[in-house]
Length: 337
Ligand code: NAD
Ligand code: UFG
Image (cartoon, rainbow, N blue to C red; front, side, top):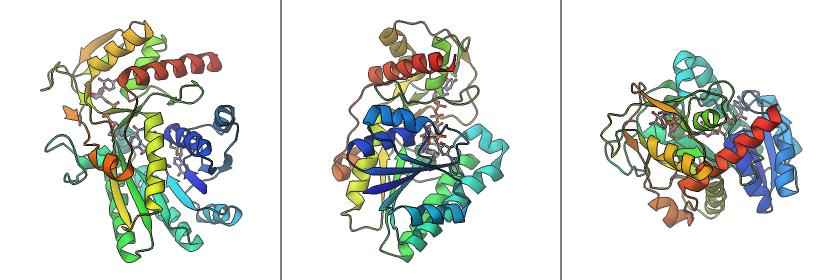
């Protein structure tokens, strides 16, 4: 198949491109590079032997999207493109609604016009809001606590309405938990601009000396060691989940399906830091800091539905996540010098 990846040059998109190419698919990436570089195609080619087609464009530009569908016989779309920083979304809500909601509406219109009705959408565990119970299964009530989360929730509702309006759509809503780590080659990974908001890239930058010290946000949560617990999932496992979802919607009778992509295991901030130190033989200096506004004590998935319906299960453990994240950081530091 030929798969269009919006946001295909980004962190998760580039790993999905590798997985798709390795499975024999042709990949077209459509990305405006607001948070990525076009040369990721070189790294993907180094890994797979085949380069994805890179098209520079914005999902808010309907004409550019129409052109992509005219130029390539697209069978399905995986929609990664969007803005994803929670704090930034509080400061710049309109940018988030424009990119994530309006951009998605443009993409869906272009897909409809082109007669392409297979879609995999990058949603997030953030749509569960503050957990009412754990583990979080797909029927857990949804809510949003910030503009980013609200954009994901609005798109989920938009997709539900679309599926109800036309039963020929085959849509997979994938709710990711906490993607971390990098491809085993160390060639692609997460390289955020500026000071990272998320734990894993912050830890790798402290380990490499690019940042002084990690602030652990809160050590008084009701968790085994008092620090926040999350369901970290290796990005290579996450990428494999997209292949499983694409395969499943190809033979699915429902117009819309929802699957969690998580491991089902919760790890605390200190678990992650100590595992990183032990696996990589490095110290990660940290201090305890006040809780971060909006954070919950614990959040982890029930991965049962994905296992039953997709036949997919995460394979890689925390040691592999922190080991690969460090391998990528080392190479990225060398490259950036
Ligand atoms: P990323 O920023 O690395 O990748 C997103 C890509 O989309 C970037 O390459 C960016 O340049 C591109 N993009 C953004 N706006 C665009 C637009 N208007 N037109 C075209 N391209 C555009 O982020 P990621 O971590 O790979 O996330 C991919 C998707 O997964 C996002 O939708 C994100 O919200 C979702 N998600 C991510 C996480 C996470 O922790 N990484 C968790 C849950 C959900
Ligand atoms: N943390 C620190 N110090 C840091 C950064 C994070 O202690 O410098 C802690 C947080 O308090 C939290 C844990 O590390 O306990 C994980 O924080 P992240 O920012 O890495 O991830 P979140 O769980 O807050 O959020 C991420 C994405 C969201 C997404 C959510 C669920 O950023 O967009 O996972 O998928 F919605």
